[in-house]
Length: 93
Image (cartoon, rainbow, N blue to C red; front, top):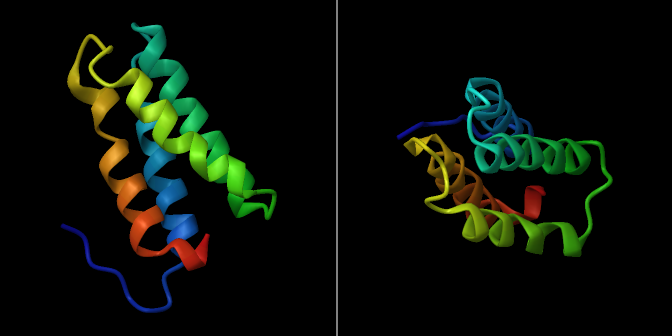
């Protein structure tokens, strides 16, 4: 569990989390490498003000498609913090 102050930008924080998982992916399985980099790229677009409603729908599609397809558990780790942030702080995105 993480705690944030009221002035924390949840878009930036969620992007930071996604970038962490993209960096930590060893690249051994294509599904994980592509998912983690795609999630980070999508959040970068939102942070730059280039997001749109269709982009938000893609998050869950990508996470659902890749669930369980990695050689280790890393592929499943970026999903919960990203989906929680999108659900709980949607107005910031």
